[in-house]
Image (tube, rainbow, N blue to C red):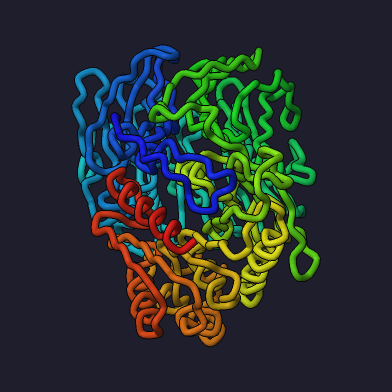
Length: 629
């Protein structure tokens, strides 16, 4: 898109007074291609691309060829999955960010789109095609908003044509069909790190429980083995970090296939016909990918490691014969694109060419992995990205003036998430504008073992906020940083962290940006989607047992301590953190005389997906930071 460049005005006080070449619209127009699925002939890919401003389905016949856009909706497409036998795709789409995804079938020949579910008040979570392409499975809360049931539907059926094959009583999802299509893997989440696995026998309706009734054990990324007699998965049963395991369906014994060691195994993809597989380790946020073939129930014959750029990759989709797989690749300075890897040789070829909106790729800056000692001696990892010419330990020109670089501390959500060295257009814009960006993985983040993730649970919640204080103290001592110009920014749980940091440590901050954040844990838990409440109470504490504590840590009750200007952004349709969280923090802040700005989008949910809204939101954020930082 032909968007104009910004005027070449240096940010006041920016290190080296480097001129700005591109405005934020240009950075937000850097495209992402991801979520690939191989067609039944093994020669075509379907993938998601956000060229129109929201992700839509595109297909591609060869590497570097001109892609064909297949959907043209104003709403985001959430996934695309090609039928294993027919020239058709299933895809999901919600409305206005409400996360109540509906399923559709796209005829790739004539472009016809057929609604498959048409129950807009319910969520539908894709569970995959049967191997013959005649049926598909999904989980949905259409019967009871607070729980998910399992459904199977004929490919040609529409509307209410799905068969309810199991009534659930919790958070269920379907992980795939057995090789002979007579069973489904059903995953059950009691909390983010407390899972169970089941096999649903479609002939009898029996739900067979496979895993022990043990709290706080993860069983994730389940995949059928080649003979249908075992499931390969990722677990941390008996360990601090996750590992690749094999679950025998007769004995229910769990055997280790590949240790995670110091790091977590992140996920596995298995081709259930050939036994070829790919699994990843999350090594300090970077992806270490292993590709191989089962040489026995728990032995892997490894193939050469693929040579992929960027440092972060995932989303493996094997071709029909498993000789190749597609994978999404990205990094700090590498916008997401789909590569196809030859399994036997490791040779990788980029198929998609998501454009960078005319910004030279060498303009994007790489981050540096650092560790900060917190108040109790815990090491907190984070990624620091410095602008060109910032000097200090992070690189840049030697003649730069040290100590005049403003910093945005960008805090991830979750809380059981992890900031990785991935591409973010807003981050690259801020860095090009003269800001440093620091992305901490405070205690409670995933990726560093079970013990680290549990360090912020319930009564230990504010220890993670104290980690932010330690990070700011560390930044203040960095030779490139101006300690008086540090801002906090975060989304979702990261928005809570921003508000908590501003109320707990008001003297540290020049400004705060809260995006879809939690202001009051009690009202958040009372109003979040029914299907999420029990999962969130397992992390934060329950309304029945921990209400007084939840009140005590809610930033809404300490707004009078805020000393920095605050910007609050939210989506009207947010089903996770309802918009009332934004309304109440803004109202209370204004009553206390805090300089506060509010921006609500009526057609967005938990975050901003539409390009015009992202441009408005982050242009406003950039203006706010320039004014106050």
